[in-house]
Amino acid sequence: MQEVRITATVGKVLRVFLDDITEPRYGYELMQRTELASGTLYPILARLEAAGWLISDLEDIDANVEHRPARRFYRITEAAAEMARSELIALSNQLRPPVAQRPVRLRPQRGLA
Amino acid sequence: MKVRDIVGFLILLITATVGDLVSEELRSRLDRVPYAILRVAIRRLPVEVRQNVGNEWLAELHHIVHRTEGLPITRLLSAIRYALGLLWTARRIGRNLKIVRGQRNAGSQKSTCGLSLHRQVAIVGAASVGVAGIGIAAVEATMSYWGASAPSAVAYYAEVTVGKGPLSVAVSPDGHRAYISNYVSDTVSVINTGTNAVIGTIPVGENPVSVAVSPNGRRAYITNDHSNTVSVVDTGTNAVIGTIPVGEKPWGVAVSPDGRRVYITNEHYNTVSVIDTGNNAVISTITVGSGPEGVAFSPDGRRAYIANARSGTVSVIKISG
Image 1 (cartoon, one colour):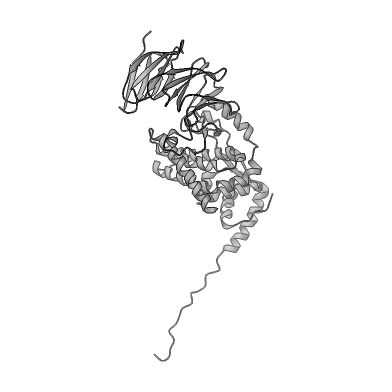
Image 2 (image 1 turned 60 degrees about the vertical axis):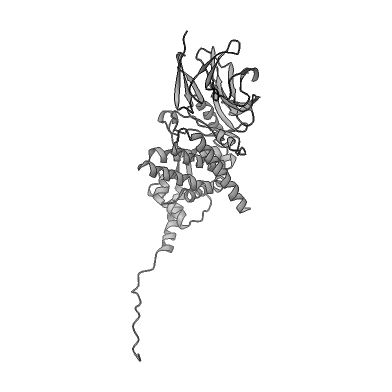
């Protein structure tokens, strides 16, 4: 498994896989869950698959019986799921906004007017 | 270089899309648009992964078009958005997947392609005559086909490079051979459907349009639009064994189920030429509607139907004996 730079967008994709690591995920479903466009999602999936984080396979159907082509699904490997979990924690720590402070109010200055 | 890339790519997009639209004009089905765009995206994938990744995208697009919720127009827009997104990133995606997916599945999928062609319903020439007709014959001379149980179910995808301007296709009754007329190259390409390899290129008349194979699979008949002839091909040797003069602008061709007659529509003469396959001669000429193009026999061979493009009618010919 190779290293992958976890940007916020990659994090979004990994987050969906962590919901249930045994669940197969399809491209269009991932697009909807992450609200990413195909042009953003698929390069990420390709990178994750090439790095060995995701594995993909064809749905087990007979295209001629179902009257539709078999779709390709993605699943996260167990090792990657571990890695993704700690990366996402680090990422969310990094992105978490600071505790809200009372807004600074400007007071009119007393003095000569 | 960047600009040239984008311009070249836009031209490719437009020609391919226009080509598809022109060929679809008759059916005027808007839901072909995302497929047209996606096919351009697939063509941008590196060869090693084109089939594998292309099939993945086609299946996903099929899912969006046919199996998601929402109004047809919403689904259509989602489908177009899906295809457009991939257009810009296809190269990058393909490069990344070369190692994990390259070649690995190519062999197994190819054989499925060959099998599926046997019962295929939908066949589409990627470079349609519309494209050749308006002078942009530089589009890639490839033929794409989909084997599927329903015309809308795109199950497999493969591309075979044939001549220029592939226009129509006929599959032999045993399913082992496919014959493609190349309108611009004036040839017919013969494909071995088991291997998807072009095993023969037969020079025929000028601008071949339609192809039909006899029920016994031993002859193929091709209409030559500009030489006003029909070429008869011996499928055993892939040689032209006869050239029959017919009416002006022969378009459609069909062989009767008993193999004894070949019907040719003559687009400009508004007639159908009837050929006796015993001596390859025209034995009669039947006047039909205006602009006859497509022709088909009923399975019992007692009716022939001719689509008249200009008069917007169908002529029904009753065949006696």
